[in-house]
Amino acid sequence: MTLRIGHGSDVHRLVDGRPLYLGGVHIPHARGLLGHSDGDVVLHAICDAILGAMAEGDIGQHFPDSDQRYHDIASSELMGHVGRLLRDEGWHVHNLDVTVYAEEPKLAPHRHAMRSRIAELLQIPITAVSVKAKTNEGLDAVGRGEALAATAVVLLSDGADASPQG
Ligand code: MG
Image (cartoon, rainbow, N blue to C red; front, side, top):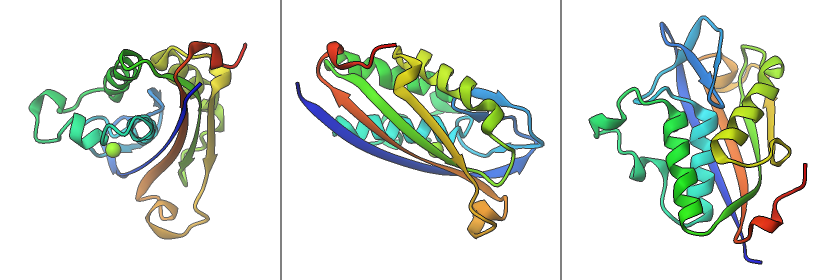
């Protein structure tokens, strides 16, 4: 069995008048993330971690913001594309672990929905998907509530039999 590890991170500015999407889930909040797509930092960090593990560049290379096809696109579509790419190349997501940095809203009530949606998009068991949330203790742009950020690590294997049971 061959294993590959990848890391991804992302940050987007929080602005008025945009819906908030995190982990492919709509989260009721007064502000949303500014971006060419829906700005979903969780899915973007996971996509970059997968592409990193495959040594296939990054999300900006696969979905350039100069391309109008990706304007206001749901990040779940980008994630679906990355998932197909990894399966086409014979890889399987063994597990992934995401940390979201947000001063608000509180994300604990949405954690299960995010895990479930990410698992569905990548066609893997929910037990292979971890989502954790932290604040930045009032420090920096995230701490001031001006932005949300996420980091992700993913482990790929070249065999489906490496997937965790359950
Ligand atoms: Mg992004």
